[in-house]
Structure formats: structure tokens, C-alpha cells
Amino acid sequence: MERKTVLLVDDNPSNLKLLVDCLESHDFRVAVATNGDEALKRLQRAHLAKPDLILLDIMMPGIDGYETCRQIKLIPEISDIPIIFLSALSETPDKVYGFSLGAVDYITKPINLAEMIARVNTHLDLSELRRKLDRLVQKRTQELLDVNASLRHQIEERERAEAQIRYIATHDSLTDLPNRFLMAERLDQLIKRAHRYNERIALMFLDLDQFKIVNESLGHRFGDMLLSDVAYRLKDAALTADAVARLGGDDFVICLPLHDENEDVIATAKTMLEALREPFYINDINIHVSASIGVAVYPDDGKDADRLMRNADAALYCAKQAGRAEIKRYTTELDTAAHEHLNLSSLLTDAIREGELCMEYQPQIELNTGKIIGAEALMRWRRADGTYISPAEFIPVAESSGQIKVLGEWGIRQSCAELKRWHDAGYTDLSMSVNVSVPQLHSAGFVDTVQSIIEEYQLPPAKLELEITESLLMQHSKTNLNILHTLSDFGVLLSVDDFGTGYSSLAYLQDFPVNTLKIDISFVRNIGTDSGDAIPSAIVAMAHSLGLNVVAEGVETGAQEAFLRSQGCEYAQGFHYSRSVPGDRFLELCKAGISTADNR
Ligand code: C2E
Ligand code: CA
Ligand code: CA
Image (cartoon, rainbow, N blue to C red):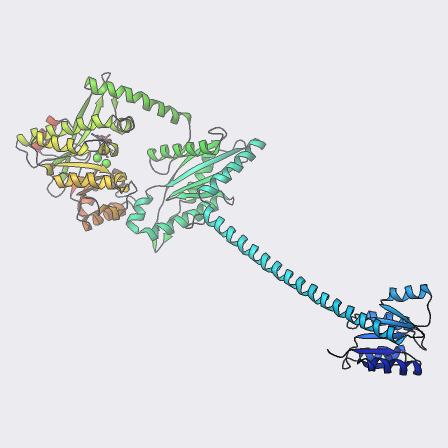
């Protein structure tokens, strides 16, 4: 065991001698001071070994033992050294005073040496134990602090990660706008607030006009950049953080509390459209963009988020129907329209029975020669009372009621019978395009029906073309591919109707056995306007690169025709040549030839 050092402080030389001898004989190292000052000086001299225990006489010249003890306890480095007073005094009050100064024990004079050694050893052991305990406590404390710090770090990390995950889950990565979930949450909160304070909220659904075609003709990267810029402008115009969200694609939502009771929501919606009015400058291209907006207002048009969103969506649908850059507020008439839907369906049942339906044929012209090469069959419904109902109205009704199967089959049969008459009259080059809607194509036995009709009228299958909509290509399902491939293998031709208005990806076109693209009437209408030429010419170029023919729909002017011809578009139809006509009249047109001046 290591030798311990005892500092002995006493002014009495004989006492000193006695004690030093005794301590040394018990293997202690002994340092000596003869008064308090000397003891303190010695203790402060850092190079001297720190004693393990101090034996301190109380009665000394100069500063006495009590004062020496008090000063030792003030010095942190040595305050832990156990001090035992040596005293001739045995009165209790002085002992208590000594303990209160921090002494651990008293040895009274005359000193019993054995007792002194025993007490010294006891206090050295105690002091050692205390030091050990202190160290242990310190170590444990440090460990706890470390664990604590690491826990805090972990918690912070997790909070950061959670915040990040929440951000990603609630925001659109392209535009950084809130997404559908965050928007719905926010709308709920706004509704609660508005309910409490009797406020109104405008919920706007905004959809870019013809964004898809921008995307397809200028590339997805371009489309993405455009969406980001649009998002930025909308956010800027909304003036409220988090007011604008992106639902996906080119669908945005703007959700604004209306502060003023008289605030005009349509005017507010107009400021949104106004924000998009300046052209966007992207990749050295100046591009004009317009959008349509459907508005629903809390509480007038819906009392909960669900209904408001549905109604804003319905209003948007209505705005899109009305054309470009339209704003429509939800009205209950939209619901009435749904009721009329039901009514129309029962009228349609009668129409089929009463024979109010007929097919008419719109000539399709080869642009190079001006010759009629075929017809698009269009269904007509003139009611007994003389009213005319557009197929744009009754076909969707027939689709949702299931009547389309019977109606469509009837239309194909009529058209094939008519084509047979034309062929028999000697116009064997003529072909017939018939519109087929998605539910019709999916109805049981559709392919067999088409085949048996063609066989019944002994027509070359390639003289029948079925027009399908882009939305079908979007559903890239096995069933769709199977149906279209079976038809195509049989020899029937397929065309994509209203091309550019749907959401098909051009990549999909390659997977479908399509022969022809029909440029939608809305693009033809814009020929000759600012930036209106770009899309038809892009569609023609792209169709040709995929080996497809192009038919332009809705050609109404010579200028449109000239432009389309200059772009290499092969075929056209439209009022410029002829409206749809009954079958007999069509044959007359074939005989006489089309003079564009007469039929405009
Ligand atoms: P669609 O297939 O896009 O038909 C072309 C529409 O444009 C026809 O409207 C036609 O009359 C009209 N149109 C043709 N040339 C011009 C023009 O120069 N200017 C203008 N403004 N319009 C022109 P319609 O006949 O009202 O048909 C509407 C839609 O109903 C058709 O659109 C088609 O999707 C559907 N449809 C018509 N007949 C049938 C059918 O027998 N079966 C099915 N499933 N759908 C049909
Ligand atoms: Ca069509
Ligand atoms: Ca069309």
C-alpha cells in the first residue's frame, strides 16, 4: 500500500517530536508546520505532495487552529483533506464549532497515541471511500450526461427526419406546393374557422388549357418547368402562404378565405388567370398559357371539404366544356344537369324504339386531290316534336346508362349497310369511320359483333375504321390491348379521335395498332392565331414519324386547309367541305365532287 502523508501542525516542539515519531513508526510520511500561517503556505505550494490528512492543533500563536481550518476549507483543491483537531479543550461548544468548520474529528490532549493512530487510519479510510464514491458519482453523472446528450441528439435527428418525411408527404416535389393531403387538411381548418367567424371561403380548381399537348410536343422537362413557373405565379397572386396546392398533372387548387362579405369570387378567380397572362419564357421559347377555373364557395356551395371539392371540380368541368380561359362558379344547375341526364336516358329508350335516330355521314377529303375518300358516321337524334339532341349530349348518357351497347351496335350496322350501298354503286374505294366509345368497346361481344357485321355485308375489313378516344390508350390494360389487336388482326383500321385533348402518352401510341390520328377541332380552330400553328404541325410531324396518317377535323376555312396541306397533313373533314349528310346525299356529293365554295 502507498504510504500516506500526514501534515502535523503544532507549536509545541515536544508534542511534535512525540507525534512525528509515532506516526513514522506506523509508516506514515510526516510533514510539519509550527503555526497556521506556515501550514497554509505549505498547503498552497503545489509542488509539495498534498497531504492525505491534517492533524491541527487549536491553540497556536498567530492564527489559531479554527481559523486555519476555515481557510483551508475555502481552497477547493485542498478542502477535501480530512482535518482532525488536536485539543486540550474538551468543552462541547468548541467541538461543535470545530465540526461546523469542516473538521472530521477531535483528539484530546494528552494524546493517547494508539487512539490517535486508530482515528487517523479510520479517517483516511473514510476519506478514501468518499473520494471513491465521489469519483463514482462523477463517472455516473458523466455517463448520464453522455446518454442524455446522445438521446437528445437522437430525438433531434428523429424530429428532423419526421419533419422531412412529413414535408415530402404533404408537398409536391416538382413545385414545392402543398399537395392534395395538406390542402384537404388546410381546407378543413379554414372551414372550422369560417364557421366560427361567419366567413366565406373560395375554393378554386384550376386546370391549364391544353397542357398535355405542350408536354407532348415540347417534352416533359419543358412541361415540368412550365408547371413550376405556373405554381410560382399562382402563389404570388394568391398572396397567402399555403393557399395554392397542386393536385397532380396540371391541376391546381387555390383556397382563399374571403374577408369581405361582398368580395366577388369571380373577380378573385380572374386575378389568378391574369397572373398567367404574360407569356412564360422557358428554354428560349415564349409560351402563352391559359387556364380554366371552377369555383365553389363555402358555405353557399358546400358545407364540408368533400362537397366543396366535388362542386369546384364540377364547376371546372363545366368551364372546360365552355372553352379556354373560362371561369365557372358552381351552381345547382350543375346538379340539375345530372337530373336531366336521368331524364334523357329514358327518352333515349323511347327514341330507339320509335326510330328517332339516324346516321349521317360527313365526307373526308384527300387534301392533295380534293377527292372524297370516305366518311365519318355521326349519329343524329331528331325527336318527334322536332327538337334536335346532339350526340355530345346523349352519347355520354348512353355510356353511363349502358344503352351505348345497343345504340353503338345499331350505328355500326347502319353505317356498314350504307357503305355497302356506296360500294355497290361503284364507289368501292370509300371507307367508313365509326365512333366507338370506351364502354362500348368494353361491352361483351363487341369484337364478335363487328366481325359478324362486316361479314354480313361482305365488306373488306380495311374499309371500316373505328375511332377510339385517347382516354382508352391511357388505360394501358391487357384487355384494351387484346381487343384492339384482335380487331386490327381481323383487318379493321383504328384511329385516335380528338387527338391532343386527352392524356395519352405518345409512348403508348406505339403499343397500340393505330393507323390514324385525328387532330382535334380545337387545334384546327387556332390555326393562324398566335402560337396556334405550332401544335397541329407538331402533331403532323410526330404522327408521320410513327408512320400514322393524319386527319384534321373541323376544317372551316381555306386558310386552315392551306396550312394543313403545307404541313403534309393528308386528310381533312369539316364544314369547309360539308356538314354531315344523309347517305343518299353523300352519294350525290361523290358523283358531283365537292366544291368548297358551295358547302361552306
Ligand atoms: P367527334 O367524333 O369529334 O365528331 C366530330 C364532331 O365535329 C361532330 O359533332 C361534327 O358534326 C362536328 N364537326 C365536323 N366538322 C365541323 C366543323 O367544321 N366545325 C365544327 N364546329 N364542328 C364540326 P357531332 O356530330 O355533334 O358529334 C359529337 C360527338 O359525339 C362526336 O365527336 C363523337 O364523339 C360522338 N358521336 C357521334 N356519333 C357517334 C356514334 O355513332 N357513336 C359514338 N360512340 N359516338 C358518336
Ligand atoms: Ca370522331
Ligand atoms: Ca373528334
